[in-house]
Length: 208
Image (tube, rainbow, N blue to C red; front, side, top):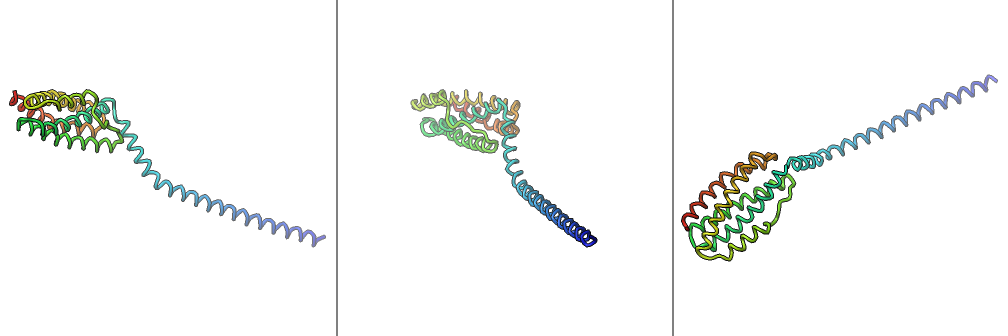
């Protein structure tokens, strides 16, 4: 009887040890698994913030664009395309050297401004118009049909009228826009447009 009790105690002790070992191993295993998972998540998170930051920055930039910003950017893109095309036309079709030079300046300066606007749009993820609207296309087509003095008068009159509107629109964006980079670009471009207006007025008087 005594031996039986001792045997039972021995078996119980062995079972307790085995359970303890199993628990320890499971605990250790779980701990290792958790550590591995935790490390894996940390590694994933290392790359995620970069993508998230880029997306967040783009989303934030888009969110910063007001109706004023979008309307201005669209108009500036289409107007800029028209100025370049008409400037190139004037540089070749005008009969007056003054008007030819005016056209060349317009094509160059507005081409540069267009590139700057495209760079801004790419940075904030905004899609600009890729062509002029119907009215602008008609103005270009009508101008293309003119020759000699008629061309010179029509082009210079158009440049005076357009640049008065441009100066006002760019000043408004610089004052009322919400996206900081676009506002800054509009503000710094005003002086160029004012110079264009002044030169257009001089050319207009010269070809009267």
